[in-house]
Image 1 (cartoon, rainbow, N blue to C red):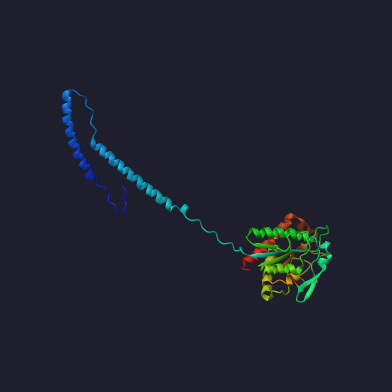
Image 2 (cartoon, rainbow, N blue to C red):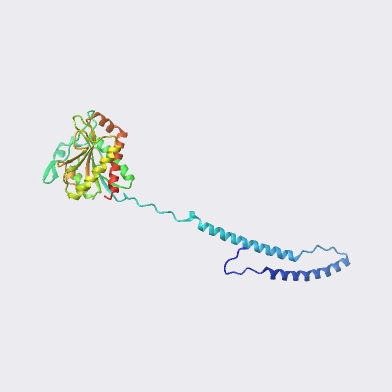
Length: 314
C-alpha cells in the first residue's frame, strides 16, 4: 500500500485482535442459545462469522485507499504530460512593418488626355520634363501600360502575402497619370523601404532582355544612392535566375544603366529602381510578356528581389 508522506498507516493488528476477542465472546453466547433452541426443537440458522465481516470491511477500506492513490497518480501523470505544455510562440515576421511602393508605368487613359500628360513638371536638380507618356507597345499592339499594371498587381499580391505593406501609385489602368514627380512623392511620403517602377522597353533594333535602371544621383543623397544600388543588384539577381529573361543585349552594361533624365528616380528620397522587364519590340521577349505564366514569373522574380533587399535590413 502506498503511503503519503507525513501520514501514519492505520494499525490493522490492533483492530483484528479486538475483533477476534469480540468474536469469541459472541460464539460463546451463540453456543448457549443453540443449546436452548435444540432442546426446544427450533431450527437454527447458520451463524455468520464476525471476523470475516471485519476482514471484508478492512478489504473495502484498503480498496478505497488504493483507488484514491491511483487517481492521484493519474492526475499527476496528466499534469506532467507534454501535451499540456503551453504552445510555442512563432518567430516574428521579419517583413512585418516593411513598406514597398510599386509604380506601374504610364496609364491607360494617357493617350486620351495629351494636355495633361504633356504638362511640364519638376524632374529634379532644376530641370523639367513632361508629366508622363503613353508608353510603348508590342508590334501586335499589346500595350506597355497594360503589361506593367498586370505585373504590378501580381507583385502586390505576392508581397502582401508575405506581410509587406504595399502602396500602388495607380490602382487601375484606365486613368491619367499620375505625373512622374507625383509618383516619386508617393514613395517619399510613405517613407517606403523600397520602391520599384515596372516598365517594358520599346527598342526597335535587334536586342532583348531586362534592364535595371538607377538614378545617377537622387534627392536622397549618397546614402540613398547606395541603398538603391543594392536594391538594383538584388532585383538583377532574381530576374536573371527566375524570370526567363537575360540581361539586356542592346543597352547598358550587363543589364545595368544609370540615368539622369528619369524624374521618378531623381526625386526619390527612398531606395528606388526602374525595371525594364523586357523589350516589347523583340518577338521572343514579347511572347513571354504576353503570357500569363511569363508575367507571373516576372512578378515572382521582382518579389524575391525586393524581399532579399528587405531581409538585408533595409
